[in-house]
Length: 72
Picture 1: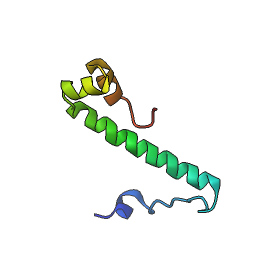
Picture 2: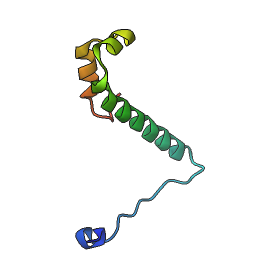
Picture 3: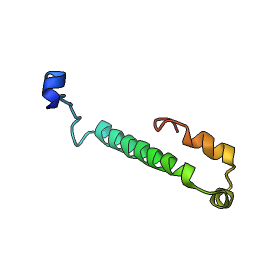
Picture 4: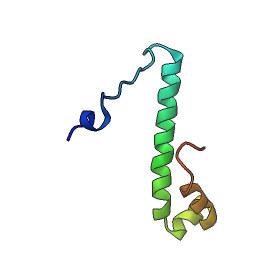
C-alpha cells in the first residue's frame, strides 16, 4: 500500500534557497542533532572503565542518554 493511499497527497517540503544563510544554518542544526542522537544511542553500551576514562559517572551518562536529540 502506498503512502498516498494512506495520507492523501504526498508531503511537499519547501526547502529554502541553497544560497541563503537560513539554508546553511538549518543543515548545520540537522547535522548537530544527528550527531547528538547517534552519540546518545551509544552511551548505554559503554562499560564502567570507558566512563571512568572520560570522567563521566554512571548517573551522568544515564541522564545524557535519556535526553531527546533536540536538546543540547
